[in-house]
Image (cartoon, rainbow, N blue to C red; front, side):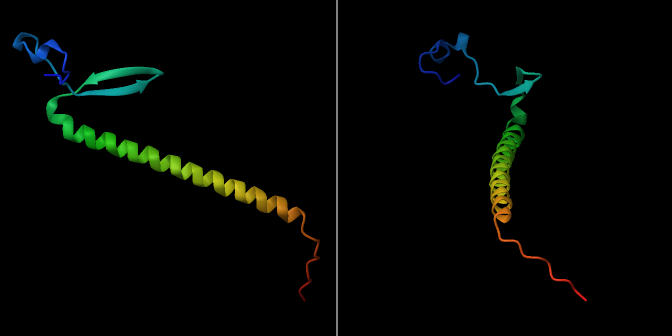
Length: 91
C-alpha cells in the first residue's frame, strides 16, 4: 500500500501498489526518475545522505571563504590609509 488514506489501494487488493523507491536526478537540466530495486534501499539512502552532508559542508565552506575575502578587502583598504613609514635599510 502507498500509505495515502484516500487511495483505493487501501481497501482493494486489486489496486495495491507502492511505495516504490525512486531516485530523482538532474541531468542536462531535466529531472530523471529512476526506479530502484528494494535491496538497494539502504545503500542508496546512505549515499543520498552523504551527498546532502557534502552539499551542506560545501555551502558552509563557501560562506567562510566569502567572509575571509571580505575581511581581506577590509585589511587592504585600511592598509592604504596607514601613515607611510620608510623601510629601514639593513647593513
